[in-house]
Amino acid sequence: MNSSEPGLKLSTTQWLVCIIAAIGFAFDIYELLMLPLIIKPAMATLSAPLIEQAVSGGMARPEAVALWLPGGAKYVEWARILFFVPALVGGVFGLLGGYLTDLLGRRRVLTFSILLYAFSAFAAGFATSLEQLLIFRCLVFVGVCVEFVAAVAWLAELFPNPQQREKVLGYTQAFSSLGGFLVAFMFGVAAEHAFSFPAIHGGHEAWRYTLISGVIPALPLIFIRPFLPESPAWAAKKAQGTLKRPSIAELFSPALRKTTILTTILFATSYGIAFGAIQQLPQIIGGAKGHAAIMAKAKEAQDKAVADAVAAGKPAPDAKTLKQIGASVTASEVSDVSVMQETGGLVGRFLLAILAVKIISRRNLFRVFQIPALIVVPLYFYWIGGALGDANTYTMVKVGIFLAGVFTVAQFSFWGNYIPLVFPVHLRGTGESFAANIGGRVIGTAAAWFTISLSASTPPSAVKLATMAAVVAGIYALVGALLTHWLPEPKEEDLEH
Image 1: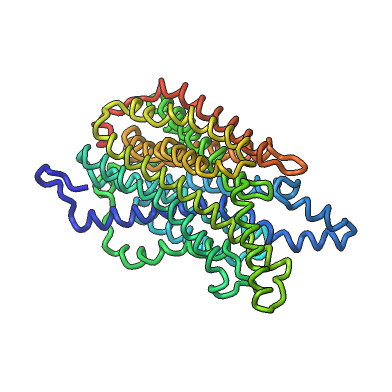
Image 2: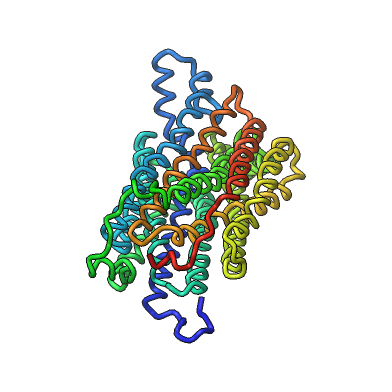
């Protein structure tokens, strides 16, 4: 991120700011992408008492169990709740956080938002009911939604040189994809070594250890925080008494109305592609009727465990142990596919960081990734619905999700570079928060609710889930492609206002 221009080499303080922002961005996505990986095993564990309750109330066990299998009525109900309610809560409170970012300063709000989502994630790992998991996931989303807004405003104002600012915002946001890579890796590690970790509530479940790992970003923050400066632009206006009071209503004034509405809707379309389709892939390939290659590997691991026990003269593993073995293998394979997705996302973010200083038009920069996503993502998910039964398509599943990640995830970095340029200092946090939280976290993540609802069936159908993912992502992407024509081109001097 150093520049060859005199005076543009990053200072130690600026490097610290970049480091803490990169950690924040990485674990934002770490937390958001955790649910698609852990929802199936978490639901299996936390629904067990509810199944027993239904059986004791007179329901036949097969019927009670069927309600909680992927695609079953109760599973679908809670999957929708866990995907959408935290996003809704995070969006609403994130909007308040954007207001507080403008009122109290970028650094203070950034720090406490990271601490909030880190310790809430830790607590979620010890949840004993779906309601507890929901509450902690809501708190995680509140922290994540506020952190993104505070970090972007902070970085944009700390680096006034345009080229340096584009590089800093681009490369620090690229760490978001590293967060996605890390959560996929951590889930794989937790699945592989679950029995080596301390028992939680009497079990060794990978999803709990994955949730607990979300506390990691709080640790460096505790030590680095005393050395972090406030945004110079915000602090100067505050000291001079010229900082206007932030106002949500001002976002809809004649001067900003078009910008606010378009950035909100377009932010939503980017998130809609991701949550409506890409985040559903673990459920598509890792379910009971998932991809043939994954199912075969899980069965092979179970057969090997039985054979090893017989060869050693020991009793064969019981049904519960065999189920855990199969689940661990499935989780590991799903983790590998998620790693490919996040590798694509990382490549996409770095490509955007490079192109951001070469393509002057922000609309054209966005279209470099938006138009391919409109084509690639719906076609890929439509294709995968017909490829689940063929074990030979497993490599293409990974290649396809890599490309989907490149073109979709890069769009998230675009918004971090673009939005600070179109809102004035006293409204920067509020404006970013409205677009990111109401647009991205509420309207955008609602795509997951649509996909899950439209694909609900008895028995569950991974093919239908894939088809609905293609439809929902296609609609969001098409709306975005059409509206980009009216996206305002920012003026450099807008950053100073």
